[in-house]
Length: 257
Image (cartoon, rainbow, N blue to C red; front, side, top):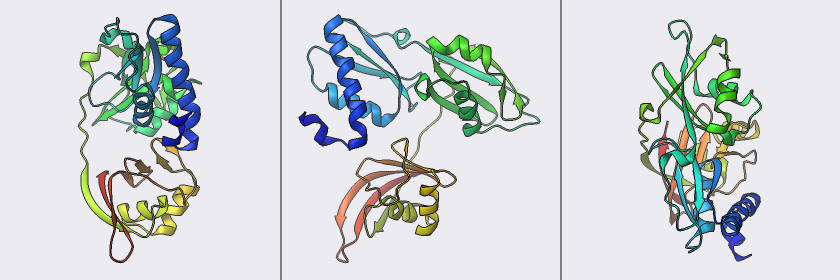
């Protein structure tokens, strides 16, 4: 199909899944709710569904500024409500006077429950307060089985979505010049570290492009890609502005550390 040419090869399997959802809505004339999707997956869903008169799509992840959201594909007669996205909000209670917990530890504990990443939305950390979002269908299982994060004993309290932590996303823009659009070249300039050090991080699985681990330093980046390197931060390729007189790429990035 012509649609595949607009996406990377590794995204074709997900496109197939979106097309199946689309056909299911048309066939059953009923809504289809997905797992939590990262922002890149959300973009793909919007692109694939496009201007289909028979299927519409909307996204919700618990609050306006969260990254991971569930998609709801539905026929024109249907009017989505917040409860149709079936999202549970949990607050983590732990001995914060004696233990500090990080995002990666919370994610690790959730993944140890044997559930797919898609069953969980954002993990929100603000000072000593920690919350996470989960799909309703696994909420009771999570509540019964998550008793520890790292070395800390924890308990969970389910709260209404209106109590969600409000975190702001800010990008600090900068211009960089790179010899190529390779992943290692862009990250090296964005975070002001040696290319060799960034290559090592990539090969050790510490780097993601659009929320997927990439282990090839030569991976070619595109405008709109979100890159993250554990221990360094996150950046977004806002615009590839072309080449300089010295044949280097001029790129406008946003930095989020």
